Image (tube, rainbow over all chains, first blue to last red; front, side, top):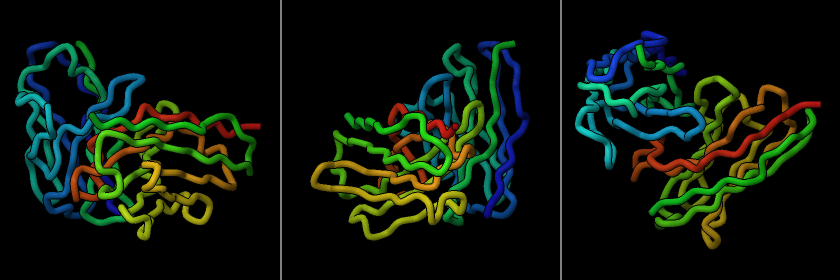
Length: 108
Length: 120
């Protein structure tokens, strides 16, 4: 089973700042990595799939990069609605599809 | 517009059973892999099970294999999760999710979730 780790666990930033979130895999996931956003009391929302492809309706301030085992989600300029928990997920080697433990982006 | 509506959650005693349902609309249901993902209170996301469009292919997390069974009724646009032998660790919000195109594993539409609580 591929284990995903995310860092940092919590990121405290102000609106307008840049957010950089990391996801590391225990073995290569090739390009089969996605990012989800989850706000309190809501279902997750797909942001990015296959490392760098934005899902439908996702603003351009969200971007993904990386390859192999190391991946990054960047939010170029934080908007108030971006404060949430972010999860990475792999579909390279399944079952199971695995998720990282999440990074919380909160308001500084 | 894609809509997924889960139902069937509730309080059940350890060892008991529940059947979750997910009613889908807004897309050609039979052509998509469907998924169940759960989230324990205050915790992260855990993939539980997936089922192919025809229902012939099913996949499970090790933690539920042999206790849970996923199925679908394409005539009614519904997917189900039969949960037997429930344990306290199965307590979670269970989400039904639609796969992104043919990219099995990625979920681009989610229901609002249904809470399953396993407790005596």
